[in-house]
Length: 401
Ligand SMILES: [Zn+2]
Image (cartoon, rainbow, N blue to C red):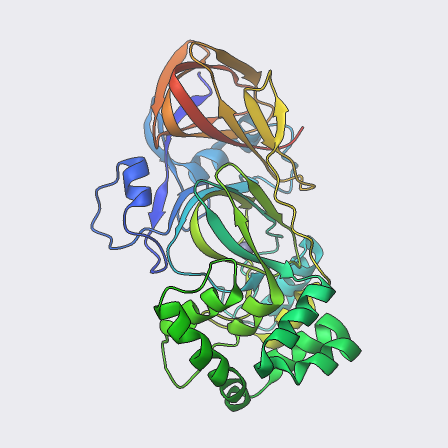
């Protein structure tokens, strides 16, 4: 039996998504107003579908039929699932400020919430599972995000440059990142409104006049404040916009976010690969549940020097591997010159998504053409070949050797 299968993912119509990017990419013709994400994975909420000689199957059910055969030796007895979740994102409106737990923290947190009897789907639930959720993204367009705390000197300068933050200077000097963040996250809403109102009133006219640059926190703070759910309440997430690095990844550039690093996607399209988990602790810019105490326990209070990287060349320059310290996944980009082919053996399970161009995939006597937006699944032991037919760009999700 061939180990190559055509694969179809699921669209997620979250309100923060764009209207056309994902539909255009995959040729989707649904009625959704917005499509935020396209999931290629085996998550029980939205499993992808594969075509087999016996008909269509949901990926989670297919893997459970014979985990060892499909997932390979990487998969230990205690983990019979796809180790990663592969996504395309189209971010039109900024996402919530968030942080993800370590594996250990997730195991402890999940167990505690189970003992307390908090329902798995309760809005107040912090831990949906017992896994960590490190993430790597590669930009498909100019992509903006908030990524970790600014270095000390830069953050101090921000506090000095904005008169509304003047009383925070001494707190940051004496109590560091944790004291500063705790002060603003624990302050009563009236205090937050009072502190941030003059700032919003100052920057909003500049934003509306198109005078702010995306590299400035003023731009994103004004954007957040100009779409209020309730104009009387100013979102505390606005502090984070000023305290965090604002970074831009250009097409093909990657950013990795490990446990404890606070972050938020602001705008653009990307490919994202993460561990198979849904554990998110939120810190603002969202109507969803925010648990300040849990947030404070999981944020690493330290400066982040952003590392925007382009991947290591492999396979005669045909592949770029975006390496991370994580064992659950590895993301790479494959670009083949005309008539060249890429041949490899698949140790565990791989998903290939074609972003542009056209290729022929061959495995065990089976052939499959992949064009823009199409994807394929290769199971453990597959020995496959990709042949370029017209200037292809593919992204591959796998597990590091
Ligand atoms: Zn995240």
